[in-house]
Length: 387
Image (cartoon, rainbow, N blue to C red; front, side, top):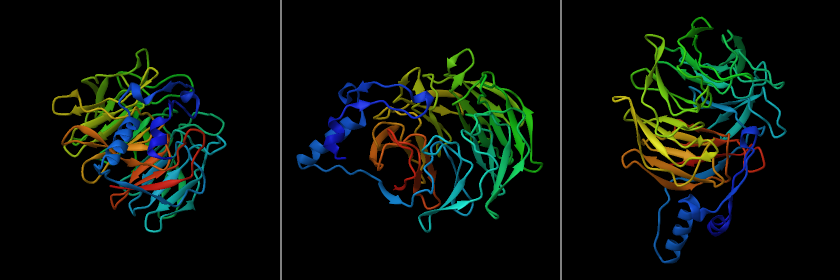
């Protein structure tokens, strides 16, 4: 699609799955969207000016199966494990595959013992990957967990969580344990949290959050604490509140709240120790705003806004300290956040708009974009972003 055709079309909200069943057109002229920026770039080009767009996308091998909401884990040897998710027919998947950056191809690996959707995947200190929770092909909430061993290419069962949950978070702590927090089952959201110990292969309860949350973020801070922010759940609905988990005491404590209640945002630990919170939803509105959390003061403060609204997007910290924001929009354009200036800038376009996909920083600094869905189709396509 040309820049002109992108600029003249009407932006139409679209979605895959029950939480995306909403529609409505939003002309680009009503907001400072990326389409407007693309028009400006076209005009500048016609007038003889030149604007450099940093970063390029290039195709790479496709997955064997189209996947939506899969997990992606960078393994110690540089390969990427893709597991679970939905296929193009809406079936939950137990299968997994490996991407090899050296060959640019995907290959099958062992399958999980059960199909999983909305599970978490955590790379452990010993190189194995913990898959926890989610729900299965029959819609059953899962407490079970399993471990993937890259040496054998197989999954094996491990201890089960104390609570069945999905849309939860999983955070690898400095001591090698994994903090599982929040999420929900078919009945309610959870405030509870638990710890997985790789040495024993068991889960045990730890302190609970002050508020039940799902679709929230969890970020390991430089000092070893975990920042939990936003989400939805409990009596408060959409949450602006945040709390900190201290592994030394096993307890959560309140910290400053965000300026905007949001669920489905991204949270990225920056090189300077601050946390960048981007986009998401508030009520039925997709957000362009972003905020920074400062651990030294325990407060959030506003920073520059994106050029387009986004949810179900990704945020990837690049090797140079900038953050690549991609997907979650009706437009395939991506943006870069520069912590030095506090601003977002246009950074090229993917081959197609995507939501519910994965973005993985590879060892060489490129970013693997894989799967997800465009306006109507679940994708097997993958591409590479070169900063």
